[in-house]
Amino acid sequence: MDERKALILKTIVKEHIKTGVPVGSEVLVDKYNLDISSATVRNEMAELETAGFIAQPHTSAGRIPTEKAYNLYIENLAEKKLGALEIKNFSKLLEGKDELNFKQAAKELAKVSGNAVFWAFHRHNLYYTGISNLLSQPEFSETKLIYDISQIIDRVDEIINNIYNKLEAGPQIFIGVDNPFGDFCGTVLTKYKLKGNIGLLGILGPMRMDYEKNLALIKFLNDILMEK
Image 1 (cartoon, rainbow, N blue to C red):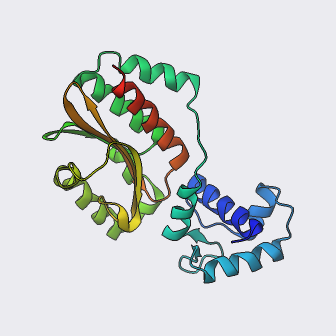
Image 2: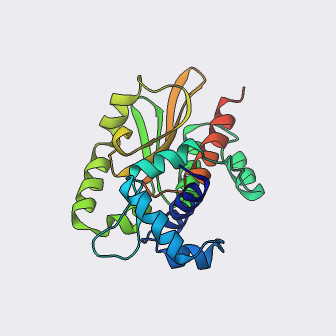
């Protein structure tokens, strides 16, 4: 992929993550001050669509990123640092590193990420919160997807039990067909060890989640949990 196509695709992904709506060529040129004409952007988008990186939903004039585009985006994900207030809040919430602290931190994580959060303190002790955040995402306004995500929520404990021993330690991202929580979702999680217990902490959202921010959040919490 040449530099111009890569820039256009990255911008489409970022804009779609922010808004949740299909992205048109005019939006890219006007909002992001791309030094490219709308006609050129349209031509490049047509080629990106042919290559399977973007798709046209229904009769919309705009395009949305495909799983292939998100995978490429994640491969080249920029390192993001948390803000001072987030660092302060999570550091304070996890001072005690006990189950009550974990639950409070999970609620804050759901609030900050705008997604659902699950936390298996150890294999058979699961807590999750932020389900309303998940259901309020535009992707889940369709009846079928509400049913699909509800099924995932009902099976969270079973899914975690299935992947518990298979996962590597540390922060990682799963999307689409590789995501045990559903091929229409994105998950950023970490497997950590604390006081002899292996825990699993993750953010669950639509495929259109803010991977940069969510990975930074999970990495930060993982570092706190792994501190001696």
